[in-house]
Length: 341
Image 1 (tube, rainbow, N blue to C red):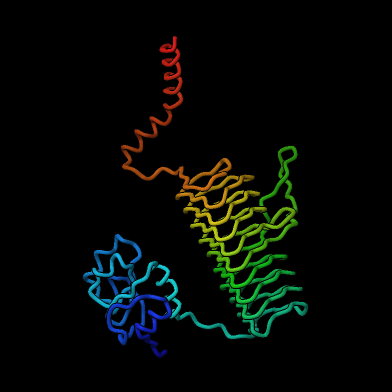
Image 2: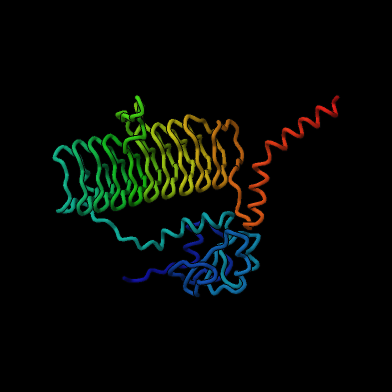
């Protein structure tokens, strides 16, 4: 495969960056500051890596104005270097293009509607009354359940499962192993025995939603589970039935959301967080990693609960003190009563 290179002036114009250096210098790839060579471009977004600017061999770097003078090479100056990196990364993406058409090994129900510009990969299964829009990609071994709808430009990686009555908006990206629309965890108990409740709702994803590898989104019990526009879900996330997630919220891996909880817009949920069921989380809430939410959060802000790791000896001491807190509180109340008396 021929390697494509780009002039720095071409890149600067596309990113809206200010170029300091040789406009005719060319780059053909991206790499970290430590690993980049003269034919590659790098970036600095985290100040803790600024020490590598002086020794980097990169042909160019994307930096903010505050650190531009530290670089010993061509620089592209942007207010948000990380966004510049994000946009430029697609120029060097070598993911193979999926050809339009239905692979001979795919199984497509006659009642399904599949755009002629869509790509249906090997061993994919498209069930009855499915509607697949233009430029959709359904990867190898994926299953699209009955009556599901997939909007224009959405991509299902290999081995994605959509159950029946799932609706995906435009330009969604669903990674391998994700399961959308499986039955929610609903059971009624009688005399010690559990009886499953049929989950009658579906799942609705808005536009530009990302669903990470092996993430699961359960269908609603009556109405649908709803994921808003621009939501980004990392790998290995559990979204239970009837959950509502507002537009442009992002969640890191291993987060679990119990049923019927509503999460607002523009929230950021740190990894391994857990949110109990039937709660409300306001817009613009930031949960740091390993947070455990058991009550409503009705105001925007940063919330934390998980304890960071410590040396075992100190952790053991703190664990003992934690068990003593109730007794200490009682003693303090007794002392307060004596002083007030």
